[in-house]
Length: 338
Ligand SMILES: NC(=O)c1ccc[n+]([C@@H]2O[C@H](COP(=O)([O-])OP(=O)(O)OC[C@H]3O[C@@H](n4cnc5c(N)ncnc54)[C@H](O)[C@@H]3O)[C@@H](O)[C@H]2O)c1
Image (cartoon, rainbow, N blue to C red; front, side):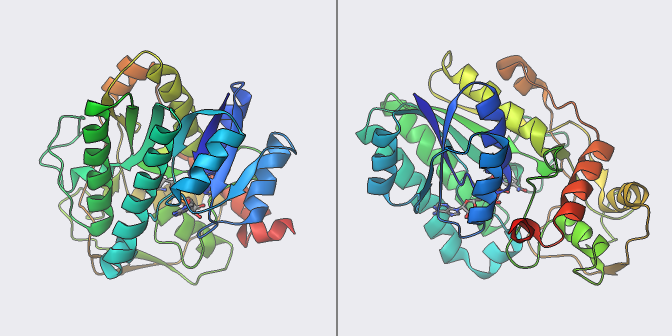
């Protein structure tokens, strides 16, 4: 029996694959490499097993997903595969709906065809849009303020509807803002093109790949005027997936769970903390607000502790130190592993 990890060559997928392997599970990666590389797969193999299976396929291709389920005797699925950039989704909504919803349909159809019933789905705190109050709980109103968030809401609804009339059991994990890297520095976030998230952008400035960090807006209604997010270490997030799979054996239906720390940091606070960790100033320029960004959001992590027995434990400094180690060892990402 094994767990199929779609999007398994990506940032969160690679880290989760390593932690799943450590938990004693057999892991199968599936990815179309649209935002990742074979080098990322090899790095996972070097941290787990040289024989760890990898299937290069589009998760929307239900026949290919079905073949992987049969070949590797899959009984659990974690579906990470998706496009994830808020700003890109504003420019290319059709590509986002097509890939994010299409891949979810492909995966679920293949699971139903082959009698696989346990699914962990990568959702996002973007489903809360601009929240009325913080912290957000799982019962806070959901609303999409950008096409990326809309694709996650559509997928959540789709999975809840299917779970209501089938044997499918689903954990919808609403991630806050994952950063950091495996402590070895061997895997980490390796976006194709210019990063659109704060920490990877900042780290690429620090290694000299980008000139300066854009701070999108200093006129928000927050203490220092910059936007506030709940940053979570990717290794804590990976642990949360193991806990979610374990909890799925006891829970039926479709359940949404926040994976965050419960603490928000502003963009300027993160830049200050990163400056200390890196030991050098980060050239920064304040520019206008970015379409699709919300002002402030952080999680209420209480329900995750109750239902998963899981809590994030790593600090912002640990996230930044681990991310920096990865970036220093791999200034141009996994390509440096050649
Ligand atoms: N990183 C974040 O800030 C964040 C926050 C909340 C939710 N999420 C969600 O978590 C999941 C993983 O995010 P990530 O940060 O690891 O992103 P990532 O881009 O690093 O990883 C996603 C992987 O999926 C692959 N992929 C995309 N479409 C595919 C398809 N149709 N078939 C097969 N593979 C496909 C990509 O090649 C990539 O390797 C995504 O669903 C994302 O929306 C991410």
